[in-house]
Structures are given as C-alpha cells and as structure tokens.
Amino acid sequence: MAESSFFARNKAAITLAVLASAGAVGAYWYYAQQQEQGPSDKDESKKKRSKKKKKTTEELAETATPGDDQPPYPVNSKKEPDFSDEQVAELTDAQKEDWAVALKTTGNALYKLQKFADAIKFYTAALRVKEDPVFYSNRSACYSSLDDHENVIADASEAIRLKPDYAKCILRRASSYEELERYTDAMFDLTALTVYGAFNSKSVEQRLERVLQKHSIKLVEEQMRNRVPQLPSAVTLASFFGAFVHETSPEGVSAESTGADRLLWEAADAIYSKKAEKYDEIDTLIHKATTAYEDEKVTASSPNATKATIAYEYAVLTAFLKYDRETLATVLNRAFELKPRARTYVVRALVNAETSTMDLLLSDFQKAEEIEPENPDSPYHKGQLYYLHGELDKAEACFVKAKELNPQNLFAYIQHACVVYRKAQFDDAVRLFDEAKLKFPTSPEVLNYYGDILADRGDTPGAIKQYDIAIRLQRDLPGVGVGATPLINKATLLQRDGLDENGETADLLTRAAEMDPKNEAALISLAQLKLTQDKADEAVGLFEEAARLSRSFDDKVLATSFAEATKMQLRIRADPELTRRVNEILQSHAAGVLR
Ligand SMILES: *[C@@H]1O[C@H](CO)[C@@H](O)[C@H](O)[C@H]1NC(C)=O
Ligand SMILES: *[C@@H]1O[C@H](CO)[C@@H](O)[C@H](O)[C@H]1NC(C)=O
Image (cartoon, rainbow, N blue to C red; front, side):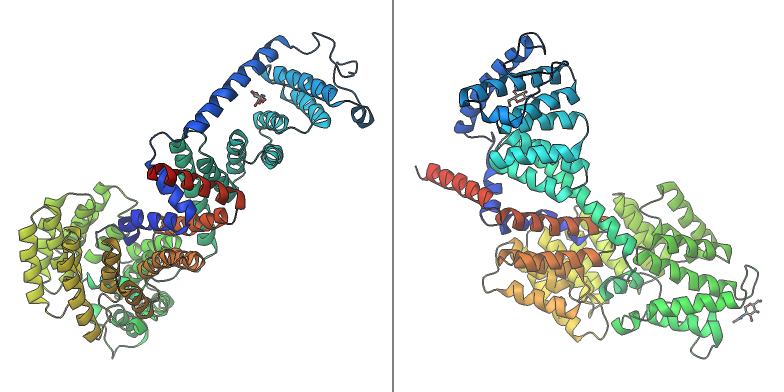
C-alpha cells in the first residue's frame, strides 16, 4: 500500500504516550513544553548572580599570569605548585581558601592561554587543598579541550556529586558521553537538564532527540547484523502478493509437473494461497525451486529459462520483504541473467522504489510495457510509485488502467479510491468505494480502507461502522485478508478520540495480537495501552518486539526509539533527586495556577 507506515502515521500519539507514562516526569514535559520562556524567576536571579561572579573571576584571571607575584603556596623551579598533604593538613581554613583561589586563578589564566595540560596541574593542586565542584568543573573543561572524554566524565561526575544541579557540568558530561557513544547516559543527562530548567530547553530537547535517534540507529544496525531475516506478518504478505496477477500455473507448470517445475508450482501455490500456514513454507519452496533449476544447469537459452526466472522473481520479492539486501542483489542479478519477462522488470522497479531514481524506475515500467503491453502488474505498481511521489493525476490514470487490465485486483480499486480522496474529491472517492464494495462484497479490505478515510475526515462513528463490518467479514473469511488490521484501526481510533470508556481497546488489541502475533502495528498499539495502564516494563518489551518484526529500517528505528525513550523515563523515575525536583516544580506550578 502506498500509505505511510503505521508508525509514521501514529508517531505523535505514541510519543505522547511514552512521555505521559512517566507519571510526574511526563507531566513535567507537558508543562515544560507549554512554557515559552523556560526558567522561572528564581532561576533568572541565580543566573544574574553567577554572571556577576564570573566577571570577577575573569578579571582576576586577566591580571594573574603565572609567576607574576609570589603565590601563597610553595612552588618548584618551574613555578608549579609543590607541597605535601602534610603541609595542607596544617593550614587554617582561611589559608586553604587563599591557596585554592590562587591556584584556581592561575589555572584559569593558563586555560585562557590554551595551556590545558598546565592548567590541569593547578586545578589538581587546588583540589588537593579544597574539594570544590568549581575546580572539578574547571578541570573537566580542560580535559574537554584535550578531547579526553573519559576524564571529562570522571571530573564532571565529581562536580555533579557535590552539586547535583550543576547544569554546566551535566551538559559537558552529556557531550562527552555522546562522543563516546554512551548514548543512554547522554540522554539521561540531557533529560536531567530539562528538569533543572537550565539552558534553552528547546535546544536541549533537540539534542536529546538527536541522541535518541543516533542511539536507536546504532541498536538497529547491531540487530540487523545479527538477525536472521524473517518474512513479515501474514497480512502484509496477503496484501503484497494480492496486488499481483494471480499465476495459477506459471509457464504451464502444474500439480502434475515433476522436478524443478513441480517445486515452482508449489511455491506459486503457497504465495497466492492467502493462508498463513502456507506462507510459512514460501521461503523453503522458493529456495528448493531455484536450487533445482540451477542443478539442471539452466542458462538464458535453456527452454526452462523463463520458469527459472519466475522462481528468482519470487526469491527477489521475499528477499525484499525480509529486508535482506544482499540476497536481494544476488537473486535479482540472476533473474536478469536468465530470461526476464515483463513482470521481472516490474519487480525490479518495485524493490528499487526507495533506492533508485524515478527515471530508472520508469524505464523499467516502460520496458515491461514494451514486452507485454497488456500486463496489469505494470500500471498498478507504476501507480503506486506515482502515488508515493505525490503525482496523483498520473497515479489515478495508472490505477484506472490496472482495473481495466485486471478486474480481479481489488487493491487497484482501493488505491484508485484512495488517490481520488487524496485529490480532495471526497464524493468521488465514496462513489469509487461503493463501486468496490459492490464488486467485492465479502472483502474486508475495501471497508477497512474506507474506514481509514472516514477516520481521517473526522467521521468517527462512520469509520467505526466500516471497521465493525470489516471485522465481521474477516471472521467469516477463510483466508488471511486484512487479518487484525480493522481491530487495530478501531482501537487506535477509540484511543485517539478518547472514546474508550469500557476498556474496549484493551479487548480489541488483545484479540488482534492473538489473531496475528507477528503484526507490529498490534504490538505498538498494545504497548501504548500498557503505557496508559502504567505498565511501562511490558510496553518496552512490546516496542522491542515490534522493532524486530518491522520490515523497513526506518520503522525499526522508530519502534526502537519508543522502547528506548520508555526505558529512559523509567530510569529518570528511579532517580530520587530528579523525581523530587520534578514534583517540586509541578507543585509550585499547580500552586501558581490556583492562586
Ligand atoms: C572555572 O569556573 C569558573 C566558575 O564557574 C568559571 O567562571 C570559569 O570560566 C571556569 N574556567 C574554566 C577554564 O572552565
Ligand atoms: C531445463 O533445461 C536444461 C538444459 O536445456 C535441461 O537439461 C533440463 O532437463 C530442463 N529441465 C526442465 C525441467 O525442463
């Protein structure tokens, strides 16, 4: 289908659910996002004060070049601090203060001269005299300039231990965590910063989002390296293969054929079966068929070259569905070495739709039409391509042609109606849906998509009515059809419009997950529900499972980012200091509202 994925369509809703799940922290987020100027008055005055202090320190630093005056502490021949712990132990508090300030001032001056290694020596000496978060902070700034991120983290952590809301250090540590790809730690710090209300909260949030994205991409890339490619859910397979002309006996192969031909027939039979249990065999059957043709030493000039090509076409499509790019490239090449037919070109355009240029894709469709002008697969998939690129008039013309050439392709009827709806011709779209309903009276697909359009228009009761009929039709259908999709769509709509009074969504989603356990949309919706029930742990597992099952890289990343954001919220909630601060802010906010 040309519509955006379930994830993309529901991203905003899921994100809000993740945020809200964290209880106080989530509420704080809502609050923070509503505030135009982040910090409160109190923070403002603090800022001014610290600004003043900074000025005096800077003035000091300017005058105090190392070695100008006799420092209060003992030095060696290089004018570096040189004293023992025993000497420090004998100092009065006032003397300690004196030494520490002098050491720090020289450290600052050296920092300004970009002599970071020297500055570190002075800050280290200052810390031996007096443990002060500012000295740790200053030294961590030097390490940061030296790209020594391990030490930045160590020193910033000491500073934060002494002063938990030390925003400058939290930010510095977050940057080093990010450099070292310790993304969850970076996210934790950035979230803490938004709670402490320091810095421009918009820019911190943007950084947070960026780190979450990087982290999720890294996780997905690791998973992809270790994963065993898997076919998607039965529903996805049914709609994917359902959009092709159903080949009952490609090139004359049949149940009576033998050898490789018999295997090809079995593969085709499974592919077009609309039966979940047959889908489980697709992979094995296709592999057996291609291997059998290779065993017969098939070449482009063999009489059975076209049959072997068809077996490879199926292999291309399953590799595409499994997101197995390496296999895809190999089997696609082999199909073109043999004897490509019209559909081979259509298949190539389809699997390259996201990675190739429009010109190349269109030239494949053109080639298909030259070989076989009446091939219905070509206009249908070309229509999809135009639809994706927003060329709605061209898409519509293609779907009209696809219907003409293959009146059995119900997806051509649905897509035609959808494209007309996208052109803002609602009445015409309704007419086309009515036409499709008449032609395919038992198809739950038509009603499901009609429901989607009504939901999009804001006609919730109308949409629910269509989903309900689709659910009934699906129940009476022997094949896969839309599977759990109308159940999920209805549940999502009830949630969206806040209509879930009797816990109906929980029931719908549980049924959906039972019916189609590999359906990632069902898992995502169920995860959202768990979040509202304050079962974040379960939600994390469901998001992760959905990420595993999703086909495209982007969907995997999105589902992973929901899982990771939820984990982060749990980690924040487990931090007593942050939780205390959040509750404080929320209480003072509530008090302000009541006043
Ligand atoms: C050291 O800390 C002070 C106080 O926070 C600050 O004004 C100064 O810029 C810092 N110097 C360095 C090198 O970080
Ligand atoms: C396929 O072609 C090869 C080479 O012409 C031949 O040896 C083999 O028997 C053929 N197999 C089938 C199933 O037609």
